[in-house]
Length: 259
Image (tube, rainbow, N blue to C red; front, side):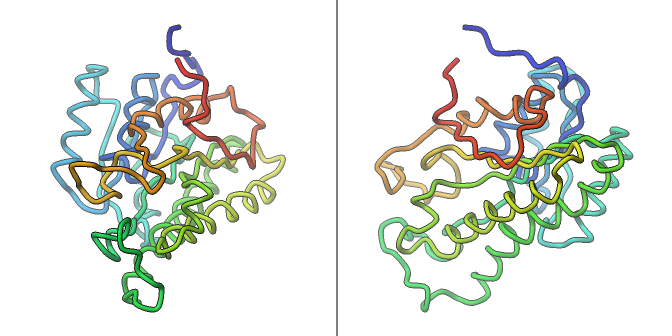
């Protein structure tokens, strides 16, 4: 079966935060292949940022992607990012809130030796929450007013599995994603009838990204490991007109129809 084509994504402008590696890179490249113009972000300029742009040019042979360094925990940086997007591409249709910090900030062995919450460095706790919770709010706060003006928009918040949210030793990463999902459901109600849809999207298990420590036997807590490319399955639908009116939902890439 061939990959679905979404004509409404032609020249649609999408911001993918944390889009220079892992899940974000796969979603950004999928959107570019579907004809979108994509802005990817990283917290700083890195080799991964340049690699992602090079991959985009190889795939589509055109400058349909731009990379911008932006720390989503800083609201002013988010505002500047949105302004730069509008100046570069002239519009903004969708936001994929993918930027996140994981448990490796707490411990490089978090998945084999759980760290109790009372032993976590308070600054590290704040850093994860600042990115995973406040960062998603900052980006949505900067993007949604423009979407409301044009009576159309998509916000896709990238989450994690239910088990991870409450797994021993996964604090604050797990709870930060629980907060993100609660925020998403509230935002969907706030935006009801405006033409702006808010949805949650997640792999459906541990994925092969830098959020997990490098290992010869790299696996999630359930013993499995999904490819980062699994996120390509549903992101185009979520950003396209095909999902218009679908809001407040929770979509799992692992359960998406296989192509």
